Image 1: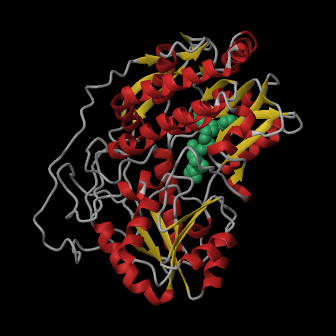
Image 2 (image 1 turned 45 degrees about the horizontal axis):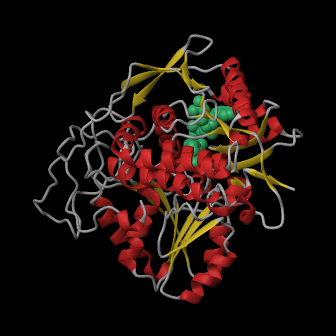
Image 3 (image 1 turned 180 degrees about the vertical axis):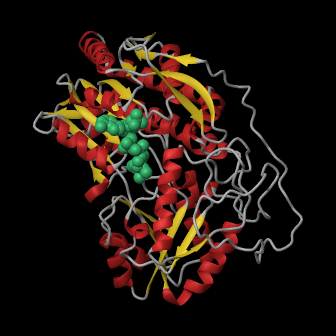
Length: 519
Ligand code: NDP
């Protein structure tokens, strides 16, 4: 959560209102006693504040969105999308095949040649503004659907994902008739059909990051959402119809990774954008190598959140909590490595444990919840396996003594200390609510340790000194560096990585460049 939307700092102990028995997915955890300097024996508890799910109608079955119409998959097969907080099936989703990808690309190609490329850019902008307005008007419906399908807290989908998605369409609408200012002295041209594959951690927001600049630049789109979170993309298809977007300009093909592969490798697709794991990013890069396509890859991360001894400690604690527990830590730019200066480490970790003891974990539809459900059973197992490796390799684990719901995939917020840089928990992307702490003594040591990673997506710096911010930020090999804040996103700001975090930028004018070829 952006720092102005961080969990309520003065909150008392987490609620146990919906909790039943405790499940402990992490092995050998040192679970803290239910004491905290701040919370103490406070009798306060939050009453449940559930958002109503009545506002959305989730249909029993969804088809593919091709050429402006809903279509059955050619193979006739479906998959099920589940609510990760309850493990209940939500809907049957069309399992798109390579033949469906082919139909979608054909529709996008036709729409590009016959309609979208012929429209005056001002007219294209009007559609983008219209989509943005509709997203705002239907924001509650989108937020509830996103939370039910992904497990993220309603407070985050309501205050972050949906407003930011609308803001992206609004921002890029402004660029549609000003493309020559984005590439001064050259003639901007669209690529044509773009293929986009998105992940499950920010389903609607990643769709907006990809579709808004693509359309503003004059391209048409075939997009594949992640199999565990297709619902907001399919709801977005309805927004396209409501906005009367010409048929074929946006096509949504649900289905497995292999269907995504047939989209991106098709010769009619001139530009590819992918967000997800580094391994699939590599597979895509290999799959399209030599085809002359444009490619942007936004992959994983292992960000250092660096706290210097002169930092405002409570503010830094909030930033560290925001950095790793926002969206259950299922964030590519999550501050998953805490680098804390040795002189303040004990004091800082004590405050951090207190703060973690106040986090409320549970029903994502409850407006008081800080940490919702892990997106899938597979992701839950992957987090558990990495946490177990941390224990086995000798790091010290600590988790607050909170109750977890008996159903659904929930993982306790986890703090590791005594972490060596060689440990897997310090090197690999966990993509869960797990923080690995490493100490340092000098500025040079902090920089060296922060850069000691295969990734390079983001980093955070906490210090009172402006000069230190400038010194450290310019030495960090990370695409985005936040100072005295974390996880701040803005449509006008470019976002992207170094090294195994991928290449290319999304957001801002730089994000537009990726969707233009200029002569
Ligand atoms: P993936 O990279 O497998 O999935 C991301 C998207 O790529 C999904 O739409 C997926 O489809 C699709 N996909 C999978 N295989 C292919 C392929 N061969 N060709 C084209 N598209 C493909 O991520 P996972 O869901 O497996 O998550 C694993 C790990 O990846 C996480 O633990 C995390 O570390 C990292 N990750 C990073 C993200 C980021 O934002 N950088 C986002 C998500 C995950 P489908 O859903 O149908 O498999």
